[in-house]
Image (cartoon, rainbow, N blue to C red):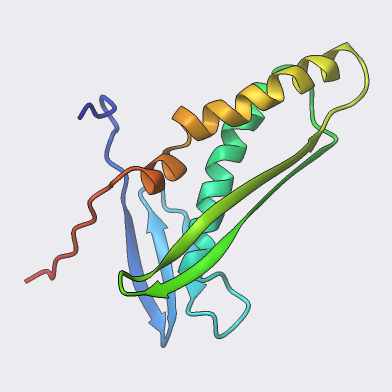
Amino acid sequence: MTTTPGDARRSISLTRDSAGRFTATNARGGTLSFGSGADDDFTPVELLLTAIAGCSAIDVDVFTTRRAEPTEFVVECGGDKVRDDDGNRMGPIDVTFRVSFPEGPDGDKARVILPESVQRSHDRLCTVSRTVELPTPVTTTLAE
C-alpha cells in the first residue's frame, strides 16, 4: 500500500451535543452538525451519500470547468439500506450526474470531456467512493 506523501492523514473529532446530536470538527476548524434523524439535520448515512456525491462532483467540476462554466450541475446519490445476517449497511449506491453547459465551442469541449471525467472519478480519483468499493478495514477502539 502506498500512501500520499506529506499530508496523507485525515481525521475529525466528534463531540456529543445532546441526545442523538453531534458536531464533527476537522483539522482546519470547520464544523458540521448532524443527528440520528429525529429532526431535519443530516444522518450519518446521508452524510456518507453526500461524501460520495460530493467527492465525485468536485473531480468532475475541476475537469469540466477548465473548459466552460456549467449552466446546471446536480448530482443525486442514493441506495437502499439493507438489514440482513451481515448487519446493517447500504446496498448498491447510485450516483447520477445532471450537468449542462452553454452552447458554443467551450461548452462543446466541456460536454466532450464530461463522460470521461465522471468515469475517471469513479474508477480512480474519488477517495470516498473508492474507499467504499474497496475492502477497507475499519478499526474501533475504546480509549483508556
